[in-house]
Image (cartoon, rainbow, N blue to C red):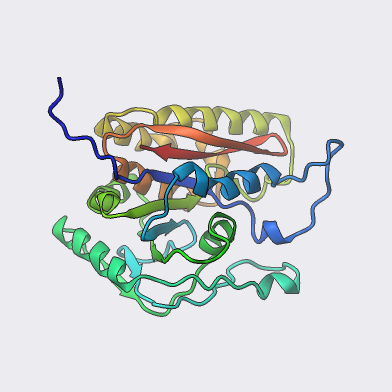
Length: 280
C-alpha cells in the first residue's frame, strides 16, 4: 500500500482553447441544426467552474498572447486594465470590460517559486488582460470575482524551459491556486476558415497525437514526447506562422507533475479539431 498522502485539496491544471478573437461577442452564421461555430466552446467554458467544483483564491493564467519576454514575466497589477490585442473587429468588441482584480500576492509567490528553482523572472505592473485571458474568463467567471494573475511565456518558445517553469509553479496547486494555460492546440490562421480535406486530415492526426502525448503519468516521458512535437509530420501545418499558442500546454504539463492529462473538450471548426486538457 502506498504511503503517499492524497492531495485532496490540490487543484487540477488546465490547458484551454480561447478561440478566435472576440468570438463570444460576434454574430456567426448558424448551420442547419442552429449551431454557430463556437457554441461548443462556449458551453465548455461556461461549465468549467462547475466541473472544477470549487473556487480558487486566485488563478495563475499562462497566455499564448504574452510571448515576447526574455524571461517569464508576472503581472503585479492589482487592477489590470484591458489589452485589445486583436485587429479589424467591430467597434463594440473594443469596449468590452472584465474588471477582475489581480493578485500581487500571488505574483510575488510565483516569482519566489521561480527563484527557488533557479529561474530568472521579471514583473510587469502595467499590462492589461489580453484576449487570451479576458475572452475565456468572461465565460468561466462572468462576475469577474476571482483574482487573476498573468504570467508570460519566454520568447524562446521551447519545450524544456516552459516545462521547467510549470514544474517550479506546481506548489501553487496545493495553495488554493488554479493554474490555467490559455492557447490553442490548432492555430493556423491561414487555413482556419478553410475546409481543405488534406489539411483537415493533418489537423485531426495532430490533435490525436497531442492527446496521446499528454496522457502519460510519467512527467519525464511526457516532456520527452512533447519535445518532439516539431518532428510530427502534421505539426507545422497546424501551427503557422509560430507555435506560441501551443507553448502554454508545455507549462501546464510541467505543473501537472505525475498527473496524466486527459482530453476534456474537443471542438471542431470547419473540420479541424481543437482540444482542452485537464491534468489531475
